[in-house]
Amino acid sequence: MKYLIIIFSVILMRISASAQENNEVLFRTEEITVKAGRFGIKADIIFPAEGKNFPAVVFCTGSGPTDRKASIKYSKAMRLFIKKGYAVLIDDKPGYGGSTGEFSDDSLFRDRALILCKEIETLKKHPAINPLKIGVYGSSQASYVMSLAVPDNKEVSFVIAWSCPAMNSIEQSAYLVKMQALCGGRTKEEAEELYKYYRLRAEAKTYAEFKDAANYLNQDSVIAELGWGYDLKEEEFEPLKPESESYINPLDGLGRITIPALFIFGGKDTQIDPVQGAAEFDKSLSKAGNRNYRVLTVNGVDHNMRLTKTGSLREQKENYGKEGVAVLSTDFLDALEKWLDEIK
Image (cartoon, rainbow, N blue to C red; front, side, top):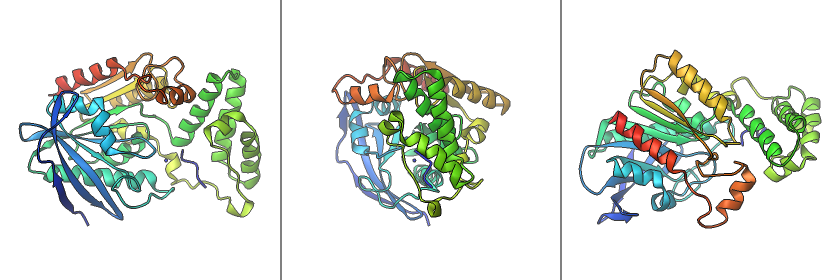
């Protein structure tokens, strides 16, 4: 059942002939192919126009399709890393752009973690990269991916995690449903009912439990707007197994790292719980003995660190449909730049 809302070799394919410009930040691009199991990943390494022995960061994106060329063109975060002297690796996910392969619903996080590890391995072997200064920058679904790939990976020297949940994906999705209901004018009691039934459907042990929860959810307009309503025949039903990725909690991995780490949350995030996330990561990292971490909350921004009134998915959709309306928070970029200066 679908509950999630998500031999090593490197071939150098093309190096740009000249430096490019992205809003006054000069850089050069090298396209690579990374082989990771059944996946063939197309990625670009973006270098500052001048220099050598660069520290580097791998972008680990959230759920959904990716377009590395669009990221190179528009990403203010990428420009900031280049400005601070970092090389950046950005890829196309399997099935998009130039990358090949297909994710499995029951191993999505593990597949992505494998790819991330191979990309880190690629950077370590690159002659222009400082192998002792490779970090990971990720958001949202990347929390689950990084929690599998980073904690025991001695090649990773720092982590930047923003809008990253500190709960399993069932709880996170149920929270999202509840918050969209509240943003849409539902009462607290109505929103809590949706939260309860979403979890009941996901964690149902019997078909009768699943059917009862599915019937409740399928008739609700919030679920319809999200596109998260579905049903199964009895012979198709199978309860979640204990080892299901749906039960992965990023705290179990990212919460025990001792390398430099920055966790940033959006004060009006309605997709993950920013209050719970900030508190739990702070507690876990402190318990792990991490002496070089910071947990910050940026007020007035949504899940994507954009300025917002409500933080709702509906507002995001409306804003992203209007050119220039979705504005990335300068406070987010300033916090990122300040932290990079501190660990330098």
